Amino acid sequence: MSLDSSPLLGVDDAPAAQTVNPDGKADLLLICDHARRDVPKALGDLGVPRAEWDRHIAFDIGAEAVARILSARFDAPLVHSGYSRLVVDCNRRPDDRTCMPEVSDGTPIPGNLGLPDEARAKRLAALHAPYHAAVAAAIARYRDAGRVPIVLSMHSCTPVFKGFERPWHIGVLWKSDPRLPVPLMKACAAQAGVTVGDNQPYDARDGHGYTMRTHCELAGIPHALIELRQDLVDTPSGVAKWAAIFGDALAQALKAPDLDRLQVYA
Image 1: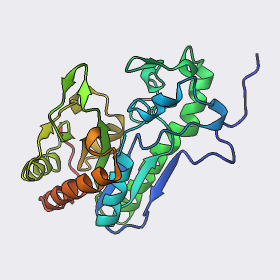
Image 2 (image 1 turned 30 degrees about the vertical axis):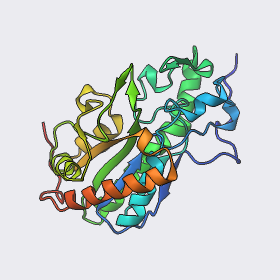
Image 3 (image 1 turned 90 degrees about the horizontal axis):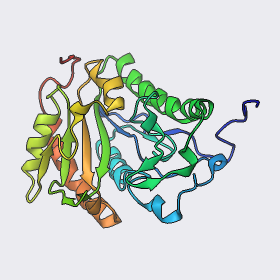
Image 4 (image 1 turned 180 degrees about the vertical axis):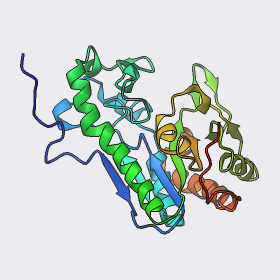
């Protein structure tokens, strides 16, 4: 059998990654790994029922919308993915089999079942690699100008997981570099009525944070990954409210010392 050499993305498909406000003047760089639920036309719907595409399994609900407001508020560049995490999860290692999940939160993904290595490689080359190239290029623009970016990765999480109601409005995930996470958690907690998770609802030390590890940890770039609870940002009004709340906290955190230099933490 000959390998299908046709491109995964056609002329009518969106790019694998998009950069908003690339010339933004802030030291802040925003990224969003799971911004959208789109699928390349060549892949159809992956055999997944329509209703499932509105769920968290397809994308991080509200994350891109909040990131765009923050991009405008702080005059910060934003790099976001163009396709659903069900097609390829840009926050997973390319060799991780869950990068193209066969099941996601109990939902089978027929288009990913028994995916041949050639098909996996095609998705990685068309979607995963260009996204990370865009992130790397954005960071390089800072470094070429003699500046150190402060990288914030925007995500969202479900309000309930396996019957447990998550109490955190905002989760700050980090591994070993405290420069941004610690003042950011303090500033978030100072907002009235806000409950903040320190490596909750996920732990950034579990090895699943491919983007932060690849682009920030190894280079000593200050960074944090944010999880906003999805029931707070699943409407335009909720997005506006929590972008303002989180943005106020971020403005305070960005005043912290030592964010303008490279430092690798063990």
